[in-house]
Image 1 (cartoon, rainbow, N blue to C red):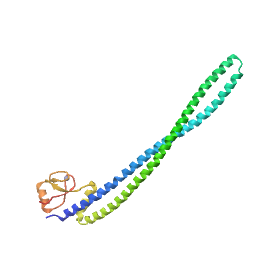
Image 2: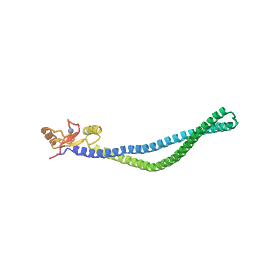
Image 3: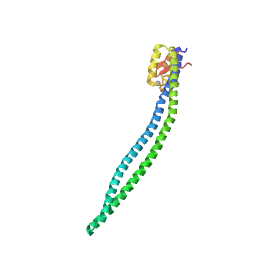
Image 4: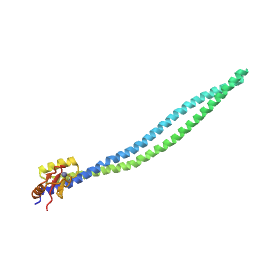
Amino acid sequence: MTNPDVQALIDLQAEDDIVEGIVAQLDAVAPRLAALDNVRAAALKAIQQLRGAVESDDRKRTELGQRLAEHKERHERNVAQLDLVKRMREATAAVAQVEMGKKVLLELEQSHRDVVNRATEGRKVLAEKEAELVQLDANQAAARDAITAEQAALGKTLEAAKVQRDARAVAVSNGLRAKYDRIRQRRRSQSLFAVESGACGACDTAIPVQRRQAMTSSGAVEVCEACGVLIYAREG
Ligand SMILES: [Zn+2]
């Protein structure tokens, strides 16, 4: 004869499989949200770095601009001075100074041009990246809404599955249910197995013939001594 507890427990286990399946789906939602967060954070970081570079170039441009203006002024003074110098030795020194000043001036002008160009280009790329982030946020908003809706739907399904599960649980005798719940909580997966070919359906450890026969005739649910799951012998 079939122990009615075995069938009730099989039914309960089927409900637990459903509950755990939904929980697994809910657990899978968090990484998807995290992935969206990561993409956004990477885009934001790139923008911040770019902005930092542009700001740094702006500071350099200001500083170079000031140095350039000062140097230009000094150079013009030196050039004007050249006309006033009469003696040969002084004239040679003054010419050398003007030549050197001109060289420095050209270098400063080149540096200034470079930094202006770089800042302009950087600002252009920054504007593009900022526009991309706005677009990304718009795209992500749709994805996030979909995930939130999915989460809510799964939550409802889970509640319903739990109610159905608890209704099934009532049919299993208290002692056996407590034992099963303990094992199920530990394993978080199938915890009731049929004896297959004389061995535990979970770990395949052979069950002595006498015990097997006793299980078949009593229809009792027992604990596998090797792996700790609940086992029962099928009829026939
Ligand atoms: Zn086992």
